[in-house]
Image (tube, rainbow, N blue to C red; front, side, top):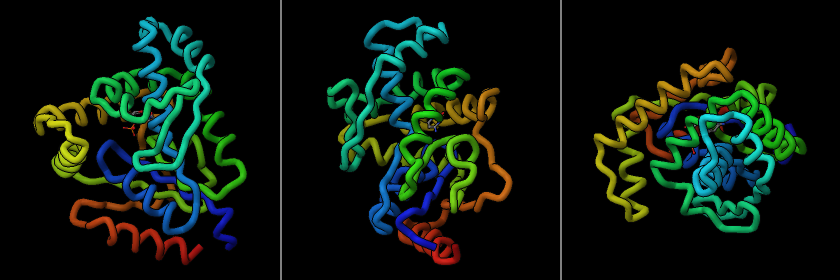
Length: 222
Ligand code: DC
């Protein structure tokens, strides 16, 4: 098939390697990359800065409507909210936690999914996030669910923080991930789930290149 119009959706829990793989895959296949989690993180950041009553769904949705999100190239992806570069500010454990909480609201998800579908409408995207294969792109050409054990995922996240110069305690990272997993899996609106027909990719014993190679074999088969 025409590879430039392809849509690849990558789903899975925190720390499974979605972002790393989606970014590399997009670069290798000359596709664009959409980090849907960054959108929830940006919402969380703005809501907390503005002291929005985050237990009030309408107040959170109103905040989302007041935001203009833009992405730039970079690793991690450069994110602007209303013209301000928030790339680093959205990568804290606090923002991740609030993003997970706010992502449970149905009206927030509805608006996010609409924005995400508009972004990928023309094709040519690798997108990743916890509903990428179910709600955002159920008809993607290739849908992948990446996963790994809690220990592996927590270790990867701790290393990632280290690389960013932030020392985070492994046990704290692990329990944060565990809590987020629980919330993402048990929420009523688009819970994190292994959708029918997705390709399961257990990344535990695999290096980045091995994961990429497996996905490229699937792409070649399309
Ligand atoms: O992938 P991430 O860690 O940047 O995502 C932050 C939170 O946003 C995550 O805990 C759940 C939520 N999220 C979501 O509900 N749906 C998505 N498509 C992406 C993220």
